[in-house]
Amino acid sequence: PSSLKLLLYKSLVRSKLEYAASVWDPGMEYLVQSLEAVQNKSARFILSNYHRTSSVTSMKLSLSLPTLALRRQYSRHSLFHKIYHNPAMRHNLLTPPYYISRRLDHKNKVGVFPCNTNAFFYSFIPRTSVEWNHLPHDIATIDDLCIFKYA
Image (tube, rainbow, N blue to C red; front, top):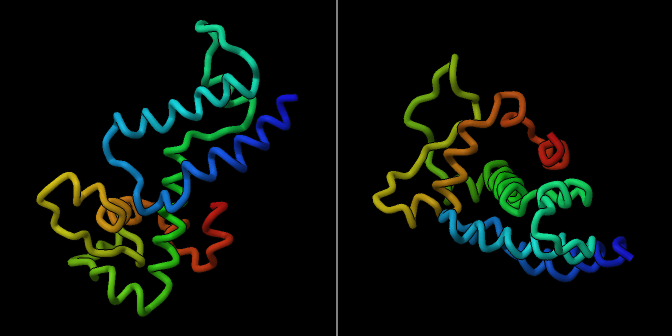
């Protein structure tokens, strides 16, 4: 049955693909696509639908499987939230912002490290700092992690 296959995929395959993913999340599109291909093949296997004309996107929607990239982004934001709200970790890992605009920025804005290479820019802290600064004010200022995860 497909429900058992879905449970096995979520517990055995996806858990391996997402282990510490917030730290190693790839910034290169070809790496993201190769990870997503694993989930696409799994969706075909779960539903036993191997027709090449069948839409994998609709299969994943019917199984309620968000993209792995989206799940990694949520994971990165949650880890960054934990770092930001821990004073010792924030002091050691994050820099204060150069300027906070009252009109454009939220009060939890952080500084972004200058990056000379894409490899450094797409690493956890610089990449997530930019995403964190672009979060809407009402989400970025949530202190409770449980509420933040579902916002």
